[in-house]
Length: 130
Image (cartoon, rainbow, N blue to C red; front, side):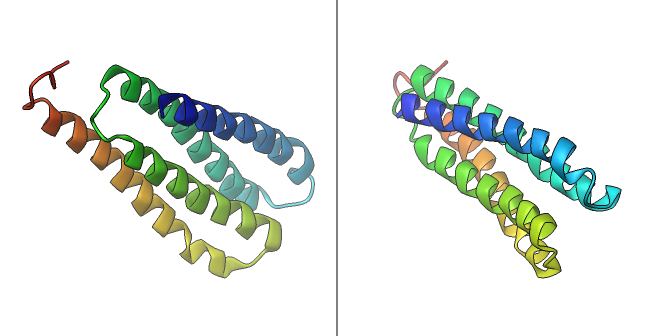
Protein backbone atom coordinates (compact mmCIF):
# COMPACT_ATOMS: atom_id res chain seq x y z
CA UNK A 1 0.00 0.00 0.00
CA UNK A 2 2.85 2.40 0.75
CA UNK A 3 4.15 2.06 -2.82
CA UNK A 4 0.73 2.85 -4.29
CA UNK A 5 0.26 5.90 -2.08
CA UNK A 6 3.78 7.11 -2.87
CA UNK A 7 3.05 6.74 -6.60
CA UNK A 8 -0.24 8.62 -6.23
CA UNK A 9 1.49 11.36 -4.25
CA UNK A 10 4.10 11.63 -6.99
CA UNK A 11 1.39 12.00 -9.62
CA UNK A 12 -0.41 14.64 -7.53
CA UNK A 13 2.82 16.64 -7.22
CA UNK A 14 3.70 16.23 -10.90
CA UNK A 15 0.24 17.37 -11.96
CA UNK A 16 0.58 20.28 -9.54
CA UNK A 17 3.76 21.39 -11.30
CA UNK A 18 2.03 21.16 -14.68
CA UNK A 19 -1.01 23.09 -13.46
CA UNK A 20 1.21 25.71 -11.85
CA UNK A 21 2.99 26.23 -15.15
CA UNK A 22 -0.38 26.39 -16.95
CA UNK A 23 -1.55 29.06 -14.53
CA UNK A 24 1.64 31.08 -14.77
CA UNK A 25 1.83 31.00 -18.55
CA UNK A 26 -1.57 30.32 -20.14
CA UNK A 27 -3.96 31.78 -17.59
CA UNK A 28 -1.94 34.83 -16.60
CA UNK A 29 -2.84 36.61 -19.83
CA UNK A 30 -6.53 35.69 -19.80
CA UNK A 31 -7.78 36.09 -16.22
CA UNK A 32 -7.65 38.82 -13.60
CA UNK A 33 -4.96 38.72 -10.91
CA UNK A 34 -7.64 37.89 -8.31
CA UNK A 35 -8.88 34.90 -10.32
CA UNK A 36 -5.29 33.78 -10.91
CA UNK A 37 -4.74 33.88 -7.15
CA UNK A 38 -7.66 31.48 -6.74
CA UNK A 39 -6.08 29.09 -9.24
CA UNK A 40 -2.72 29.40 -7.45
CA UNK A 41 -4.40 28.52 -4.15
CA UNK A 42 -5.61 25.28 -5.72
CA UNK A 43 -2.11 24.52 -6.98
CA UNK A 44 -0.53 25.33 -3.61
CA UNK A 45 -2.88 23.04 -1.69
CA UNK A 46 -2.43 20.31 -4.28
CA UNK A 47 1.35 20.53 -3.89
CA UNK A 48 1.20 20.56 -0.09
CA UNK A 49 -1.02 17.51 0.04
CA UNK A 50 0.86 15.67 -2.70
CA UNK A 51 4.01 16.05 -0.61
CA UNK A 52 1.95 15.04 2.41
CA UNK A 53 0.92 11.85 0.61
CA UNK A 54 4.59 11.10 -0.05
CA UNK A 55 5.32 11.51 3.66
CA UNK A 56 2.29 9.43 4.58
CA UNK A 57 3.47 6.62 2.30
CA UNK A 58 6.76 6.63 4.19
CA UNK A 59 4.85 6.55 7.49
CA UNK A 60 2.81 3.57 6.28
CA UNK A 61 6.06 1.75 5.49
CA UNK A 62 7.59 2.80 8.82
CA UNK A 63 4.58 1.92 10.97
CA UNK A 64 2.70 -0.88 9.23
CA UNK A 65 -0.60 -1.96 10.71
CA UNK A 66 -1.62 1.56 11.74
CA UNK A 67 -4.45 1.64 9.18
CA UNK A 68 -3.18 4.87 7.63
CA UNK A 69 -4.35 4.06 4.11
CA UNK A 70 -7.84 5.39 4.83
CA UNK A 71 -6.29 8.71 5.79
CA UNK A 72 -4.39 8.75 2.50
CA UNK A 73 -7.64 8.25 0.58
CA UNK A 74 -9.26 11.09 2.53
CA UNK A 75 -6.33 13.33 1.62
CA UNK A 76 -6.55 12.37 -2.03
CA UNK A 77 -10.31 12.96 -2.20
CA UNK A 78 -9.92 16.21 -0.27
CA UNK A 79 -7.25 17.41 -2.67
CA UNK A 80 -9.34 16.54 -5.71
CA UNK A 81 -12.43 18.28 -4.32
CA UNK A 82 -10.62 21.32 -2.86
CA UNK A 83 -8.19 22.05 -5.67
CA UNK A 84 -10.40 20.66 -8.41
CA UNK A 85 -13.31 22.92 -7.48
CA UNK A 86 -11.01 25.94 -7.56
CA UNK A 87 -9.62 24.96 -10.96
CA UNK A 88 -13.13 24.47 -12.34
CA UNK A 89 -14.29 27.74 -10.83
CA UNK A 90 -11.48 29.63 -12.58
CA UNK A 91 -11.74 27.82 -15.90
CA UNK A 92 -15.54 27.86 -16.14
CA UNK A 93 -16.35 31.11 -14.35
CA UNK A 94 -19.09 29.30 -12.42
CA UNK A 95 -18.92 30.95 -9.00
CA UNK A 96 -21.19 28.34 -7.35
CA UNK A 97 -18.27 25.88 -7.51
CA UNK A 98 -16.72 27.83 -4.65
CA UNK A 99 -19.40 26.33 -2.40
CA UNK A 100 -17.89 22.86 -2.99
CA UNK A 101 -14.36 23.83 -1.96
CA UNK A 102 -14.97 23.68 1.83
CA UNK A 103 -16.01 20.02 1.55
CA UNK A 104 -12.55 19.28 0.21
CA UNK A 105 -11.04 21.27 3.05
CA UNK A 106 -13.00 19.27 5.61
CA UNK A 107 -11.76 16.02 4.03
CA UNK A 108 -8.16 17.32 4.24
CA UNK A 109 -8.55 18.26 7.89
CA UNK A 110 -10.18 14.90 8.66
CA UNK A 111 -7.39 13.06 6.85
CA UNK A 112 -4.63 14.71 8.87
CA UNK A 113 -6.56 14.25 12.13
CA UNK A 114 -6.99 10.58 11.27
CA UNK A 115 -3.24 10.24 10.69
CA UNK A 116 -2.50 11.73 14.10
CA UNK A 117 -5.16 9.67 15.85
CA UNK A 118 -4.08 6.38 14.29
CA UNK A 119 -0.41 6.98 15.06
CA UNK A 120 -1.00 8.11 18.64
CA UNK A 121 -3.57 5.41 19.41
CA UNK A 122 -1.23 2.73 18.06
CA UNK A 123 1.53 3.67 20.49
CA UNK A 124 -0.34 1.82 23.27
CA UNK A 125 -0.33 -1.51 21.43
CA UNK A 126 2.50 -4.04 21.56
CA UNK A 127 5.10 -3.05 19.01
CA UNK A 128 3.21 0.20 18.44
CA UNK A 129 5.91 2.56 19.59
CA UNK A 130 8.23 4.53 17.34
